[in-house]
Image (cartoon, rainbow, N blue to C red; front, side, top):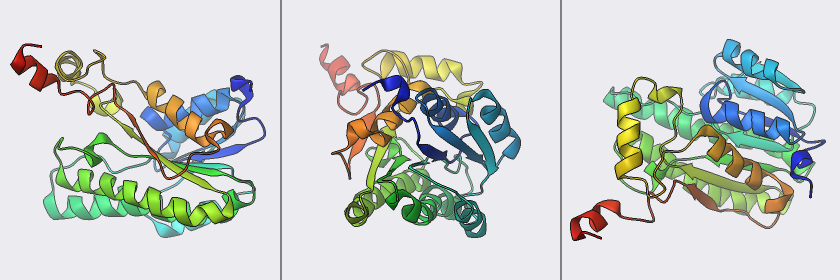
Length: 247
């Protein structure tokens, strides 16, 4: 298969695609021939990304607003791949933060997936959700981590339901990725790269986009209900343990 045309004739909708991993995924799928719907609560950011692509449209989508989700998906002419990428950023407000994480990071993906299923079923489509290694180990922020862990469970249960419709559902769990959220924290990223990551660097948005592109493509046609770690070996290798032993 010609990877440069793997998405030819297919339409992909990406949430939170105005920057970071979502924007990189939009560029990757467009480069492989997809028509891309770049959605973000920041419509100006979505427009900037869409303007770079050969066949794309920018759409304002607030994943915390069910009416916004229903409106966008109701007006879709066709859809083959949904990428649930949007999430609520880290914050310090305890109770409100929990509500925002559950409404945005978790329920946003739930509502988008539910709205997308009728479209995806018509074209043997796929859902790919961007989770986090926070779902699998302690990296701080209880609410964010719990919401991302719930996404993993939702991916598995939705995969079971959607299989009868010919729709595959998978998830990517990134480690630390150098996105705009880390602006001004480059020293911390360098320390993480040197001390925590076996491959000696943190991730890039393109690393995650490549994994999303694979899981959404026909190359992953017999994969569903799976969570793929894209974390530079962070969870597989205990660097601190080895350092203590002098290995």
